Length: 155
Image (tube, rainbow, N blue to C red; front, side, top):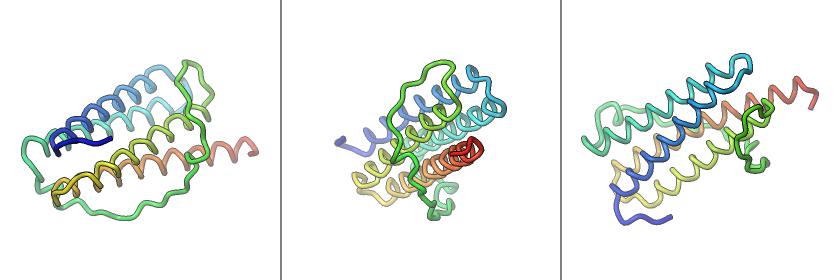
C-alpha cells in the first residue's frame, strides 16, 4: 500500500486504530470467558492510546513524550505465522479468539513496518517504530496466552 504523504499515512493509521478499538471493545462486551472481558478492554485502551498518539503527532509533531519513548527489541515467537485468518463470530472458542486477535496484531505490526519503510522523516520513523513496538508487545502477549492455554489443554 503506497501513500503520497506522511499525512495520508497517519490518517490511514488513525482509522486502523479506530477499527482496533472497536474490535477489542466489542469483544470485551460480548465474550464471557473468565478474565477475557478485562483483557480485551485493556487492549482497547492500548489501541486508544495509539490513536491519540497519532492524532497528537498529526497536530503537534513529535512531542516530548514521543522523543523520550524507549525502543527495545520485542521477541517474536511467530505463533500467528501458523494461524489461518478467522472471522469473528459470537461464541467462538477461547483459542479461536486468541488466534483471531494475534493475527490482527500481526497484520498491524506488518502495516506499521510498511509505513516505517515509506516514511522519510526521522520524526515519522520514530512514531512508526513506537507503534511497531507496541503492536509487537500485543502480539507477544496474545501468542503467550495462546501457548499457555493450549498447554493447559494438553496440546
